[in-house]
Length: 117
Image (cartoon, rainbow, N blue to C red; front, side, top):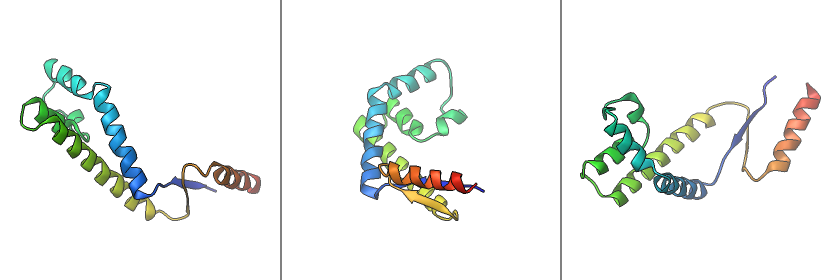
């Protein structure tokens, strides 16, 4: 038997977390990392640069868009990706959905599941 547990947040809470995470990544040197990689000879067409955010950072580094626009575009793309993931997982059957703070309920479900195995 398989126990499937999904963690879900209200959309506003999820989007706020995404926005903060993108800002944190920028503050921790994401732009500098991309600049360094490009300086080492990696091409903007490299597969690794297809991940969310890189094309916008490259556009920023080329002077095509300002940093605040770069951040907003990355946040929007990340939100869209999260929405697609949620839609995909909601099609999965037998997932028990919880808010991440519902630890006691999650542990109770796991204990019950394991005792029935």
